[in-house]
Length: 260
Image (cartoon, rainbow, N blue to C red):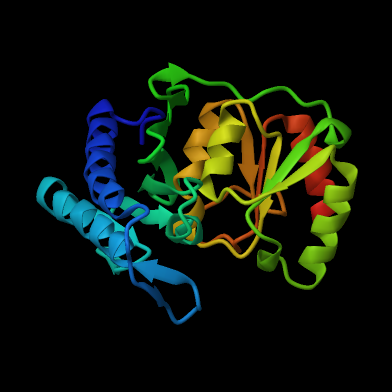
């Protein structure tokens, strides 16, 4: 495996984002039925159509690759290259008219995310992280900002509901040590971290499609992203996530969250 994501795969991922964005924009702030999945999370026709159009392109262009999507499961999951799709990360924001959601498109090579796109189709913000290249936001290179430690850190998380039991206690302790805590944002918060506006995003109960695309975006901007034990994130991670703009802040957060 090379250390650089091939440029033609980056171009393909952008085509996927363009196609899904054309679907999502048609439904944004329009009358739309909202269904509840088995896990009580919302899903809409926009989620389903966006994933279907991505799958259609991939099945034509890359028939030997695997696909793992939030809405339609896994196809050819043992393939060397696996595309991991979350058509609308932040469906609750989408259905309430808030633009704090995004389409996540990741390419994973032998369990390692090597390409990630966070695409906000309404605001038209697009982060691209690809192994061997710096992260960009709308074609401009971005850099996570320095942060010497928790007292200076802005911390983000999507919702308190994702933290259960001891995880909630650990998060509250972390939050009390930080300069401020901001709720909401889903994938958009990780893009803002890569662009120099957040210092930490800490979450739990995440699925692979929730974070696979985020890893190349954060790390390509000079940030650090692991689970709460400090291990690299992959398809078999436990769903806990620490994204940090600075290794010093990451180390302090990790020590609190892991209990060391």
